[in-house]
Amino acid sequence: MVRIRTLEPWTDPRGGQIERVLMDNGTIAVEVLSLGGIIRSLWTPDKAGERANIVLGCDSVEDYLEQQAHLGAIAGRFVNRIAKGQFSVGEQHYQLDINQAGNCLHGGHEGFHRKNWQLGALPDGVRLSLRSPDGDMGFPGNCNIQLDYRLVGNNLYVEILACTDKTSPINLSQHSYFNLDASDTTLNHQLQTDAKHYLAMDETGIPTAVCATDGSSLDLSVATQLQSLLGQEEFTRTSGIDHCYLLPQSESKLQRFGTLSSPLSGRSLTLYTNQPGVQVYGANYLQGTVGKGQQVLKQYQGVCLEPQQIPDAPNQAHIAGDALVHPGEIYHHISRYQFENE
Image 1 (cartoon, helix red, strand yellow):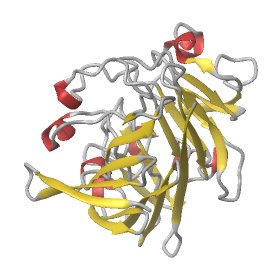
Image 2 (tube, one colour):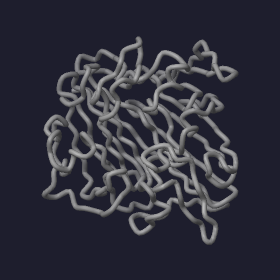
Image 3 (spheres, one colour):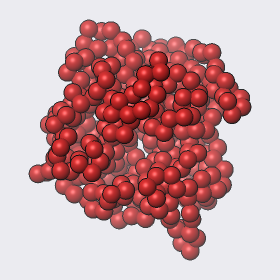
């Protein structure tokens, strides 16, 4: 049984209120905000059975609006990058908002992470909905999004459906920063992934080639401490891991991506997804962001596992499709986060 409790709302300095909901099934608990579909807190048990929060967050709407790290939010309308913020559908060319190194990152300055979603309850979780109008950050079409967070045992399900009345790229992902032991670094965390390929990138994060992980520092087929990646040639440009791993085409079935674990707390997170890629980001540029308790967060204090379509997909359909959703089609993202404690 999932118990759902409404918390005191926050005042949005832009007008209106930000709703807050706590859902708890006795094993894990999650606090969700209507702002950005944000997961503000996520409590899971450690090896002693004690529950504690394992994601980074903020204390106020103002802090969330100030930070640029997309803490806990749904990134969109297109997570990751579109090169030069440009793409075409047939003869129609589109220019998107430019907000990072000449590219459109995570949907632009006013992406979905800054929108106030409608929030309601499900029997086993919560449902959020958002309407993104035609021309929002340059994206074509009126886009309707439905986001479900559901608790099932020791699993958090994230399921997103979307549709549009004009052909548009849609690529949404949950952007929580996981820290499984509440320390000021996650470099002691270990990551293992089943992925056999990753994307090489240019200096702005745009894919340039599909590469095999075998024989490279990105081969994480066995659990590898994140500290050991620092200084490796493949991670120098990005100051740590910030790479998109590719999964085999699966006809929308959930596939196991891999496991993030903390030997200190005994917690682990195993991710399953129907998406063709997972961006692994080690919070390489998080330093200076204000978190809970007005704590100034540090570089490498969290790890993002972002299931998604391929970066720059509208311009690089040869990798795994163009991520374009046409009128009458339904975009479907589902990911399962399984939490263990040993």
